[in-house]
Length: 235
Ligand code: C5P
Image 1 (spheres, rainbow, N blue to C red):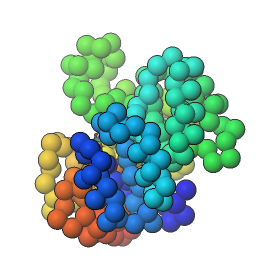
Image 2: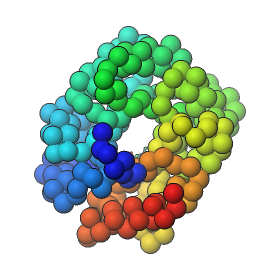
Image 3: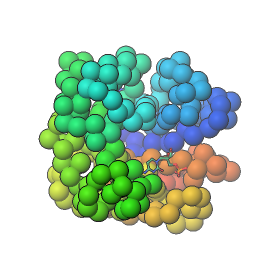
């Protein structure tokens, strides 16, 4: 793990390797982590993950596993073999799925962090109810975060808007990883309900996932430095 424990996780959302590497080449492993998601993983495969790790970066493998317990545990094991720092699964896969995955990772000397997605922030109240989850998105987020914690997971991915309530309910040790972060001066892109980095950290976020404010900036290292400085001033 990166000793400096940088709070910013840069979302590597690119259609292929070349633009990803031109960004990676400009950033220092001590200043940020990298998130690799379904698009890049599906295009470039596990070798890309290993290459980013070989450059010295901690990698959050954002594949949101959701399957029967044995299959998810085996996938987590495979991700751990790649050397990732953090990975995730859907809490709605249930307690046994989460516990089995944690048990599979537990024996490792450098156990990767395992966090849960609760409710996708893209789901409206109507869509959530339609798939059979009664109650509000907030109630479901709280319930599933509690289930993830009871199942031994390290934390959850959440909207920065949910961070304060989750921090209060889940205690100080539980990791809250928040996308949907925008510096006051940045474009919202397609994000609707954002928070500034400083507000997210004050609300209790442990790590901030930031994509386009860094990846699409004219000067990505400067954009990263500015966001990191705002976090440090708020922590
Ligand atoms: O470019 P931007 O900062 O909006 O990227 C945010 C990253 O976090 C993307 O990889 C996106 O898929 C991810 N994410 C999100 N909102 C969620 C969950 C994940 O923006 N609720």
